[in-house]
Image (cartoon, rainbow, N blue to C red; front, side, top):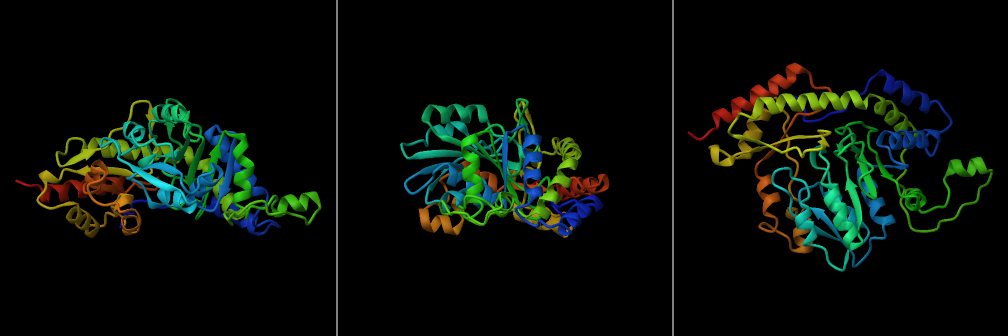
Length: 382
């Protein structure tokens, strides 16, 4: 099976982790700040705060922005549930927005129509690795006094108008899950240029306590104080060592992903049963996912049949995502359901994520292309 995504870990990564495991600091040690500084530098941002997952990064963003009961946060319907869940964790209400059918990114026009006096923030999701229209979204947020958060868990290394993702919003969340561009096993990062949010972010990941263990050791004191309610969202030093090692290889891995994407685009742009997602001018895509849309009207069977047949041939396709408002929890709690966000819902019935990771060989890419062409050809309506 050729998986849709997987990690790449080499001997250099293993040595970096082993060195930390032999050291005195396994958590809250020097590797944490080193990884934060390296990631912030890569993005061209002033600050980065390491946390235990991309979900923790999103939750931390909601916390330090002061989202709470009575507040609304606008998010796209087409995203992973963590984007919406982070709002609920702080007692806010996620307000779903439809997406642009050509890109599946948050539609600024739809966002503008959803702003109310209760709106606190907008979370833009860089779906599949393409940055949203941050120029339009930033203008909306400025007009209405809203915070803008980038859920860039798909988009490490992407750019918009020559600006790196990580510098386009008040706060940016990244994920280091094994299928992402770099991995720390599990892990995440909040990146920001706002000096006022850094200390609250660091407290929140450490139970709301004023200092961590290393800071107290350096100060020669045992004293600490819990200033607010926080979580244990810390990332370990050996995870951070892995992240530093992986980050050095990221530019080459991004180029490989983009090369694979170009081969897919060349292979499928002339296949009438397949519709490619648009890439917005001025953006440099990070290609966490390579998503295509099947033209259902041209096929005898739906997406499920294509999915099953491809997997039976060893092509580990996947689907990203069931729109959040269609999940049972959200339907029960908020009364959401089919028909509310037609663009996201129509896309869900057609989308398929093809294998996309830097470890794919040319032969594997050829196998994916051949299998997709064969399956859609066999299922084409004549």
